Image 1 (cartoon, rainbow, N blue to C red):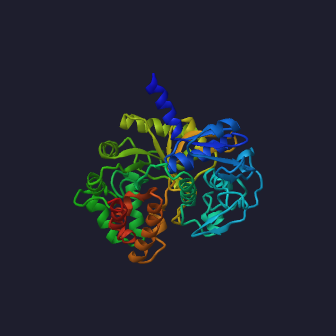
Image 2: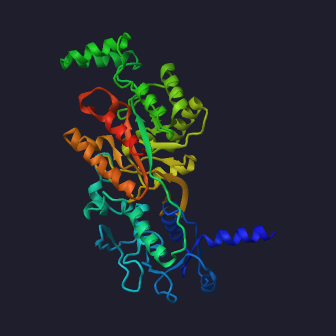
Image 3: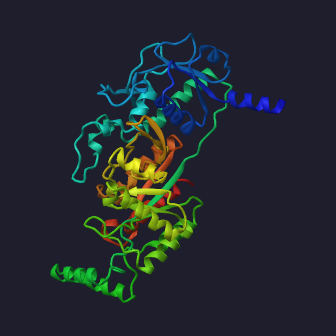
Length: 445
């Protein structure tokens, strides 16, 4: 019995107790991301002053006024509101990073990092009116982070470490857990083969297209592949397996298995070879789906694709990435929640390296309309192979990639990169991408 009591006390002793005048879903959501996911400390909340006073380990207050001389962060109103409002944001320099929602002199941190983190994690700005691109995507240039030049920093994680510093100063005996830098490679497969298994009509169409455009080299390559003398240029799976075997963390491979359309042109799952490819990839890597363009606005289509994949792999589909990196917030994510798909890899920018949600730590989707934290985990990606194409030389690409890796390593975060099976092909456009991918994998060593 004594042991149980001791254990219970010990658990509470190792927690951060937060006093706040009102415990809201936004407060618990945000504190959990910063304290638990990033810093590894459990967090409890109280509105009772006597409980707060009695707690003799890590504690802080988050309110308009401090209670006495405790560690105090002055709260902005954002975490105590409901719905959306027009927020006036003034971004300022803070050491070698940026901050917003300034707090005033009595606060132990110059900015309300919790309200600011919530603003970025909930993707608040993506619900407000903004200009979209041709595909209806939220553009990097529309973001606060781009406008104020902090898109290249995982500011939420950096702020969490600043909180850790003030806690450490106030509670010098407390031993904080350490977290380790991780890599999460994602391989997106919109088209498994360039020439093979396309069916007669598509092959004839491709042949006529090669002829009319005088692409004779491609034409000869097409038939060398079809006759089995050459490997299909998009068939880079052997290379992927070889890489996967060298590391103990799993790659996530996402296959497009939706119906053929203007936007999606993969192989049909009636083709035995395609199905056996998916099965063999599933032996080495984690497999999920790349949701088709039309499934974005139609949950029935998405459900059919999920069911189809589960029939192939005999496991539940856990991970998804939306076609064209397109998100319609909150609908896209609500659909995933409803279908019990709990990992998403769509949160990032297609043409810019950086941190769309301000963090390099996977986080839960917060539904701003319902004011709840959902079971869906968003894995923001920080680099898409296409974003590297805008740098001309291989040296340039490597340099920008290393810069972003360094940012993630600085906070021991998770570096998520999305590459496509064809970016490991021999096409000129993708020259050097195998070594860029290898560079990412090696960054954990």
